[in-house]
Amino acid sequence: MNAKISLALLLTSLLAPVAYSAPIGTLSVHILNQQTGIPSKDVDVTLEKQQATGWDMLAKGKTDSDGRIKSLYPDDRDMQPGVYRVTFKTGDYFKREKYASFFPEVPVLFTVTKTNEKLHIPLLLSQYGYSTYKGS
Image 1: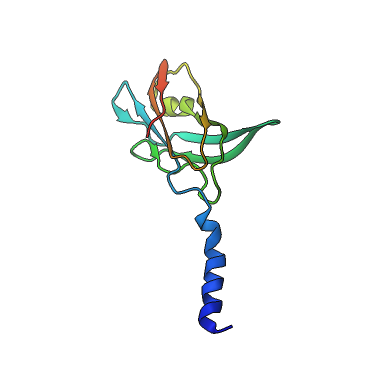
Image 2 (image 1 turned 45 degrees about the horizontal axis):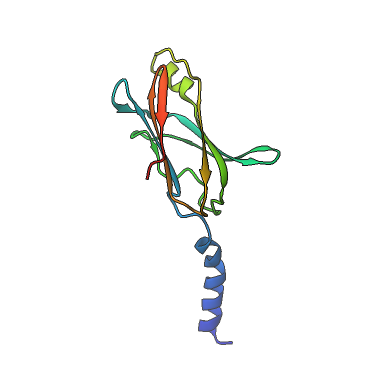
């Protein structure tokens, strides 16, 4: 085998797993504080997948200055169909902002129906209420 073919085969085998992993940005989240109209920065967020025996932790992150995590799902594996839970740790956020809050955290359960389906979970937040929806 000549050197060019060997190099091509080596590169193909090294890059193959990347081609089958979840695209960056497969799952994003965003938090907007409805009371102030300002994005909620530095909020801890966790992602779990439901299994027969409970919940498996997949990722943790913290919202940026725009209240976003642009890519919460690990990009080294496929996001398979199933039930997932994103949990926003809102109690710590409100405590830092010196506000009382009724909800110490906001769990959002959702269903993935297609492998690597691009999903966005926005959270509209106030001290005593919240809403969320399937974004794009």
